[in-house]
Image (cartoon, rainbow, N blue to C red):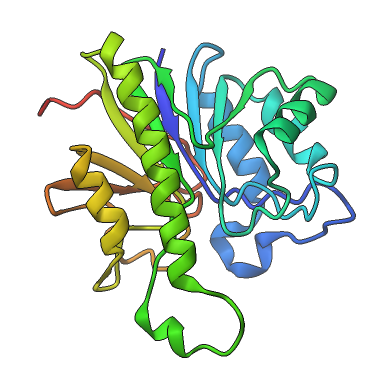
Length: 246
């Protein structure tokens, strides 16, 4: 039984959504078929896959039904976090009701909580990548407020992870964010501080696309960061091995 990660599937199986990613370059051509083929070749029914956001282009939870039925039918359990394009995202009670209504027995949501999966405890949130230059962008979005809120959500998730670790001390806490913490010479200091406060050693992130010459896996501030964006991974779920350093 293994744990895998992949994010940024950007599914659009509902004809009303009609927002295929195939217009974004050759790597995206036939991406849904690539994803399904690679997933079925690697992931078993007893495995777990963590999906850190940008799951569906749907604008409502009902519009996302076909995308979730597709995911639910793939092998393994799926733990899904929120991305910046997941406008279908709802409260946990509404997400739970949606699951029950559609028989999505293999799907769980990462939302101010944590899960045990094999050798790991899974925590995380959407995150946000704050750039001070955003303060000069016209509009009503308060980027500092978003970062503060996501920092609180990450702490809530990690608090739950610490509770699970009390009875599972041998398991490593892994954090899954949609936004990178360190990227292109900038750092989300608030999010990084939380990771360090909880002694997180490995963090997985998505969101980035297209810069395939960039090293997606790297170490910073004593933390190993690994990219999970589907196009970076060529639509192949990435297996997470037990760390030899812990």
